[in-house]
Image 1 (cartoon, helix red, strand yellow):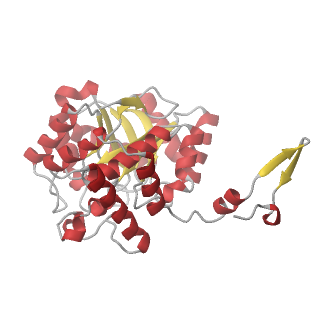
Image 2 (cartoon, rainbow, N blue to C red; image 1 turned 180 degrees about the horizontal axis):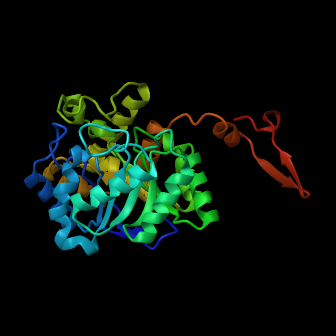
Length: 352
């Protein structure tokens, strides 16, 4: 596995695939028992991975507890990321959820105990809570960085404009910077093409991409009535073939997989690795296996090479409507003529 800086503004070296631990535990009624989780962890490290992604609420806190034993002998070689917002307790209270400084500090202290570690490499603010000012979030993160309890901070599932604003505020005030953004991104969910990915490129932030298989849709298994997150978590964070675009996307993945004698999973991940290769910053897919067999099969994507034509086919099948102003901007341009800008209005555009 290759390594890269997580964004252009850090020296933090992470592997090109991260291991998500949402399935470490059975607190949600769907996941992996301890021995299976340990096997996945070991297999990921054996493949050269070093980027572990978890959260205080995964499996009601079980994921962090399991990881404590797994990471102990390997702590210094790992980049350990966790999240706060939703809380780990079964019953949410007013001071165990949300993004306030109080919740942030309590959540980090609790995660440090569950993980049995002295510091967290990367703390994600899991979701916006609709209440806490960005200035409060940023100052709290800065305090945690200065105290050494976390080393880096990022925002997860925030709209691009809020991430960009946070980046500017932190820079102007000399606070610990936002180093990355975590978001859902896959062939079946490409909303980030509109603003999030261009923002990451422009600001040099790292991107961590969750649900790279669309909750299992891109594996093609739901067409064969195989079980997965769709059944185990009652469709939570799972895509289905609701539209013609969804169907065309799955068709294209299956076709390319057949051409390469690969699995649809490997094709979907290889497409994301291609996106990372042409990006101006790091884009790291977060794998979310439930079994060692799933992990081993997915890691085969590291050796898979998509042709230019295959990438173009996958791009076309999964493309989204960007909407305004992006499509208008794509149809118009500004030319500099004699030092004066000339806007090409529709009437001046060449006819296709």
